[in-house]
Amino acid sequence: MSGRRAALVTGASSGIGAAACRRLREEGWHVVGVARRPSPEASESLCVDITRFADVSEAFQNVPPLRLLVHCAATIGPVALLPASDPDDWRRAVEVNLLGTYNVLRAALAGPLAQDGALAIHLTTGAATVAKPYWSAYSASKAGAEQLVRSAAVDLEDAGLGICSLDPGITETPMQEELRTRDFPDRDRFVRVYEERSGRTPEEVAAAISELARRDPRELNGQAFRVGWL
Image (tube, rainbow, N blue to C red; front, side, top):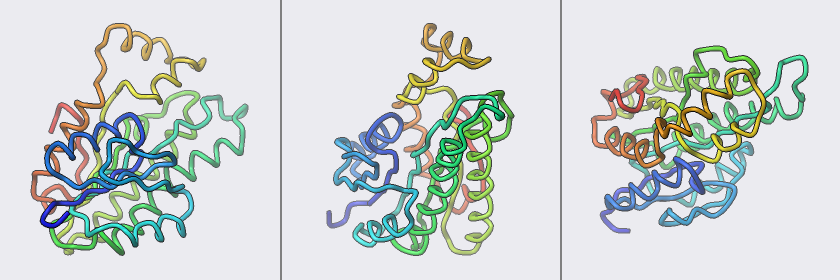
């Protein structure tokens, strides 16, 4: 790995995470894939539950110094009206989407990502800023994660690093497949995007990640981007 840039991608076993691993490897990066399952598109794979800080911290001690962190791991959580939502499923969404983001950033910024010129990219969603019926768990937990990224950016203002958010828009991933099996008021829009093939592919999002990785991290710090509007 001597002389190669190193990146770490969470949610690396499928969807946007797998596409990001593939794209970065094609561009010469050494890619550490983090997921609950092995990441076949990564250079090396770590099976880690990001909701457990001790596990994340221990795993990150064994990765090389990083120039790039791409945090894709997330869960849609219970898709239900708040009064009918399952409390355990709701809590799980917070554990993955918010606490998982904290655990990844905390371990990385105190360890392998703590170097001048490094960049962290957090995958966010429009649901973090626009309330959607039946999506309280996803919206609230992703909104918290987005504010966490802003707070981290302020903390890192003079560190020579960068942390930013990237909204991929509707992208054809396993999460989208799962959404189309659920019953909720906005479901027809997602079905229509799928049938019309008007959404994004994971490869398009990976290309946007690659574009951000080529920029000066200090200029990206604290900013939010959307695929197609970089």
